[in-house]
Amino acid sequence: MHTVNLSVRAATSSDIPRLTELWQDKMTLQQQYDQRLRLMSDAGIQWSAALGEWLTDAAYAVFVIERDVQILGYVIGKVEPTTPGVLPERVGMVTDIAFDAHSTQGGLGRTLLQPLREWFAAQGVEQIVAQVPRRSAVEQAFWRALGATEWMNVMWLK
Image (cartoon, rainbow, N blue to C red; front, side, top):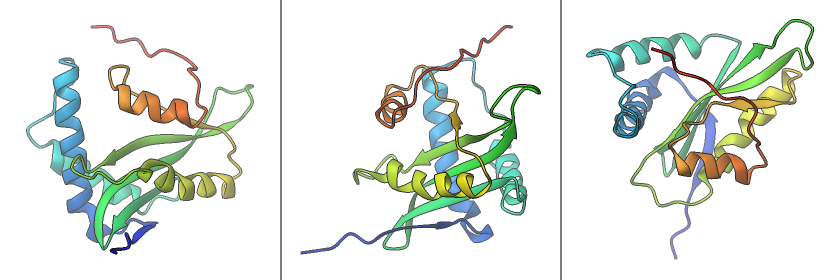
């Protein structure tokens, strides 16, 4: 019987090409659901460069999940201030999470989110916010299953 070897670790600069590939796959899919979203011709290059900066920025944490050294997904989190005079003063923002669409492994999201939650706690942050596409039933269900509730709507004005 084959044992699945899942591991989660902090991302490194050598992971940038694979994470960019996962990001581009996710964004291509999101474009199919929402025509307002358009990618620049050099979107992957720009995102890769930003990811390189996030990997060295103390306000960010980036984790990857692997099975037998193949990266199946990533999560990016950032500590952000809230409105002055409002508690909590800071929240943990999940800025992005993506998985290999061809992976059939269950539980990847929960497993990947755990070290990010621990990182947020080490920063003194107890509440997490995630922007979830309204048209992504899978992402909506994932966050709701974790106990997340709607907080506010983001409006798009053109």
